[in-house]
Length: 251
Image 1 (tube, helix red, strand yellow):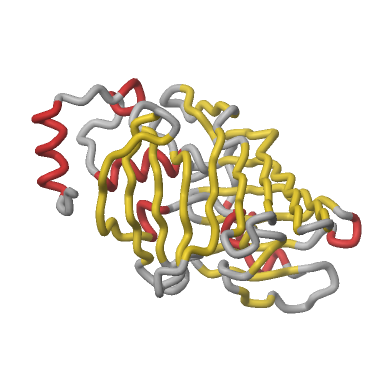
Image 2 (cartoon, rainbow, N blue to C red):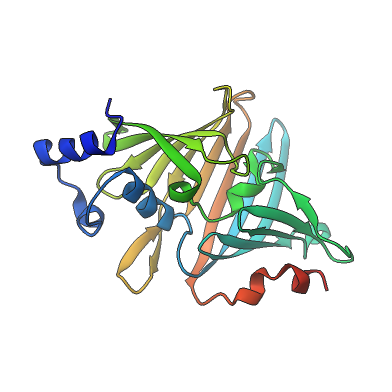
């Protein structure tokens, strides 16, 4: 196990690893940079809009919900599109704080990113990922996942505002995208596991990159419960600051 950046960088030099195109563009590669690259593929760019279609299967019960997501750096606005009874409801994440807004509600309601949204998805799962800024790297190892060499990074939340206290995160060495995550409580209890697919593509002006297309969440307590989050209509665009203005959202 390699517990310091210095030892990890030493491993890079000694082993002469081939990193692929994404890694070649990364410059000096260290745990923080690995996370930054993986974050970009999960929404952490200067301005992006996409649609999420959620499907939750809990025993015989199936629930569906669709949302429009507008994100810029660490800020995110999720607007519910369907079902009709929920249409127009909004979740705003601003500077790691989160609020719930719905038509007719005079004041926004502070909420936690950890609260359940639907099925196995939490409110915070809608937002762009900022693991590089929100978590401390506690340990990093290497292993293959379905034949794909990966960095396995143990993360601990910097504050209680993060969606999960601890995460174990598999990042593909060749693609520099997160392919699997395990989410834990502060006591070390495994809550759920997620796998990620990247069939979408985006162009940020610095070349074309993979972008998440599906997140599949498995409940570790009720293993038959599954939630899928499908990402579509991904569009790189300028998101005005007014989008995240709380006062404007409750008019």
